[in-house]
Image 1 (cartoon, rainbow, N blue to C red):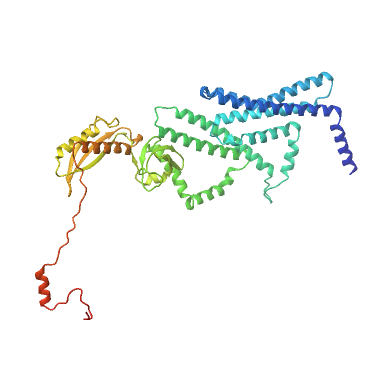
Image 2 (image 1 turned 90 degrees about the horizontal axis):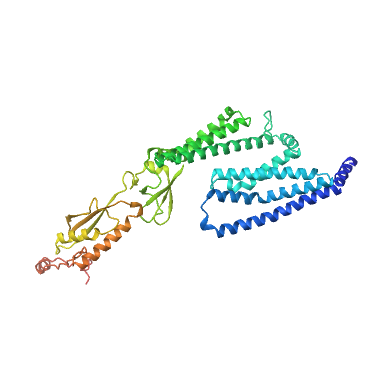
Length: 459
């Protein structure tokens, strides 16, 4: 007990010595100046982006500016610590604490810069964006423990914590080490996969669906390979994972058939080029659209296809449904689409005049093609009129089909009214027949009771 008290007193006296207090005050001042510099840098950056929004065209310039703003407080603290150390060295004061702070600050600058560059390389939608500060703190803390000589003590302490009691020893340190190594392998393989994806997507001679298929397959393959290599590098025998792979296979056989089928169907869609981003499709059996399930393919994902309709509703269609069900691809081989509009005209009108007016109603529409030209047909003689039809072609179904129908129908209505052509309405005649007088007299002479007579014989 006395030894512990003496050691505690010795530490307290050392921390309260003038030399240590001077260094601690200098380190605190450097931290405060760094916080103030960070606030000023963020405010300036925010105002710059607001004022210069229309002129922001250089992506790399914006990224360099963002990185400079992020590193500004740490660089300011590093400069202040260097100045303080130089002053203390000139005065002959020990600089042990300041040297340690300089090492930790330098490590923080390098780690923060590395994490930021990693986020830039993985893209703006990377998962690192939300974990950037946490990853920086964990890496810097690990490096800091190593710089001050505490890492060996932490490793020894964590190695004593056995997570699997028994003959096999699996310590907490082994778990953390394995997670770090596997994560590092996954990050590296993700960078390689992203670089390969950007390279493939620039190959214009390949179809879009083929490029997406190659990119997705390469990404999953490299990330899976990185996980396996990371597990092996962490000291875990890969052959011991047979039980785990068997459990995964059992799960695929019972509960994950649909998920596995959707993933396989997604690769089939990418390889056979039946559906690709930008195609106009219509499908049945799904709700969420107001234009008869008509929409544009926005994305091809591993499990589903994103279809966006004209109302802005995005429907997530499982890939398996597109493989097993019939899907109309309006732009599979040719984007030209023929539209037919039937109209009824009265028997009192001349059908030749009606056919001529139909042609005039469609010939000036900007989206209707001149080659092949519109045609009109007399289709049938119905109960209450003659059914005539106009047929025409459009080359841009992605801009909508029903809007062209509406325009042509309005034009037909106007031109028919202007020329006195009537569009008949189905009519039904209801005839009520009275009973013949001779039949009534015959029933009276035969003694037959009237239909409304009382069945009990009472009047």
